[in-house]
Length: 252
Image (cartoon, rainbow, N blue to C red; front, side, top):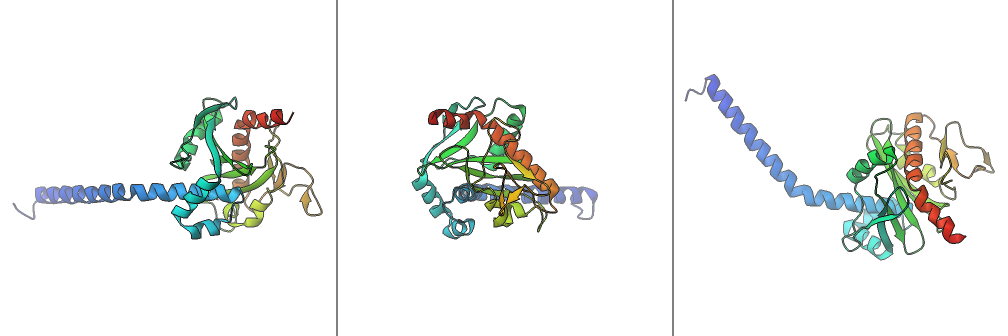
């Protein structure tokens, strides 16, 4: 075949593209298991951080195996609930089954509709209950976990993450421990609107502490990220309102 002909160029290019595609597909498939394991460990470490079982840095230093082992030792039960707060299905504790980010994204559309969703609840042996939130920031998704004390209203801790928020501004939802620390001791007003508020310009304070139980300060210079996280928290905690309402019923 004439190596200078157009036909040769087309055939040669097609072969190269096919070989490269096959190699990439093989590599992707080979790494899939490791990627899924990393994502699971990362999800669990964020959940455990919100629950106060350690810092994010400590869990990163542990490695995947130790993170999953810690989760297995601390978790009491994990399951999904619907809009009425009823249990839909148990998550497999033996397999350390948790909702991935893609699963949260899929449920987010249903949460927006207000029904048809099945969202996860993680209950730990020390009485802490952790639930996820998911939404849109300025440049991409934001998500995280909020931990509640045994009363089902008081926030024990929180951890948030993002895909591509601006460094030094919106990225502070993840990078600034002081922002996440603001949630500790605040309350979620389930059944009310808003359930929780991230307030631009600052929540009213007395002696450095918010005087409104369900409000914290927004991040200065990161209005869109703060608004996005605020919307995510309110929408998802609103979706859990019926479930957390059972805590109050049990107290009564």
